[in-house]
Length: 131
Image 1 (cartoon, rainbow, N blue to C red):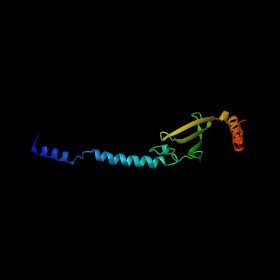
Image 2 (image 1 turned 90 degrees about the vertical axis):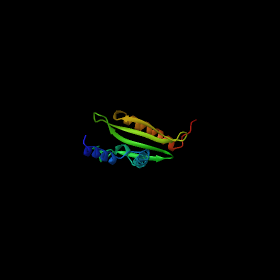
Image 3 (image 1 turned 135 degrees about the horizontal axis):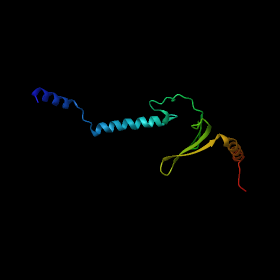
Image 4 (image 1 turned 180 degrees about the horizontal axis):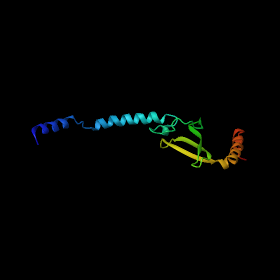
């Protein structure tokens, strides 16, 4: 190998940047901050590069009440049949973790579901007490 080629390869090695643990800690901090900002958006899981329907309007309602949040989302099956997704979200005070519970109400059940819900909501609103 000629002396000129050796000098070039040595100067190339000097130009390479070595990543240190400090560099990674800075990157991790930026990632953490970005994830926090993303989680505070209305639909954080929809914010991805290359997602074609990001701007598609969703039929959705949100109800916040006493440490719980309820999400009512209209969705469609693969066959295009509509259904209602109801999600309840809250923070478990014992371990400070987010807890989500979801039920799905399909088109063929929505009438019976609505009747039962309305009946029970009426009783709760009237101050229902067990006998």
